[in-house]
Length: 218
Ligand code: 3DU
Image (cartoon, rainbow, N blue to C red; front, side, top):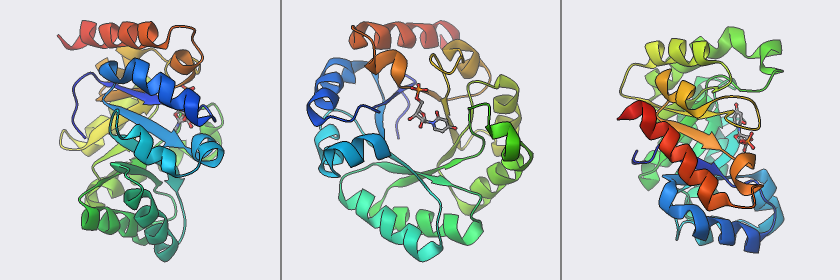
């Protein structure tokens, strides 16, 4: 995925028309649109192809199964038109490798959740985040997902993965993280959902986030 604006829109609305309307409004300010279970269950898998007309689509299914099931999920997602898929790492190396091998067959990418952004991530995730980030490098992932809500974690994970892998970072806005902090701490992209799609003026909010990103990258 090409980094330009540094913003990924998380499209967690559940209606097709609303998703398309927001994509139309915001596509000039985003490098990709991330879709997950809420929108795909609400609007059907065809929404991936529809949104791909506006921006590359990241399928955030947090794939977390045995290798064969992961392969079947990824095949479906890429055939539907997604540019990349988000996978979990905790099911292990063989499961992650299956996602990556399938992505390679389609010329697509896999991003691995290294550490989640919500408070409950401290229950189980934090102690394994660094090992998952190492595994993402070893298995050939395109990048990892790491929390804007914990800039220190972002810095640690950036140190582990080096500069070749990318970091996409959720948790800005509704979850309390700040775009400029996340970018300054090593994120390539920030992922923003509710602050944009729940706003009365999604285009303006997206533009102001891009301006904030630019304030620390230029
Ligand atoms: O909090 P927001 O509304 O800006 O949405 C964040 C999106 O990123 C949402 O789709 C959520 O499922 C996803 N995400 C996280 O928030 C945290 C993670 O660790 C991974 C993905």
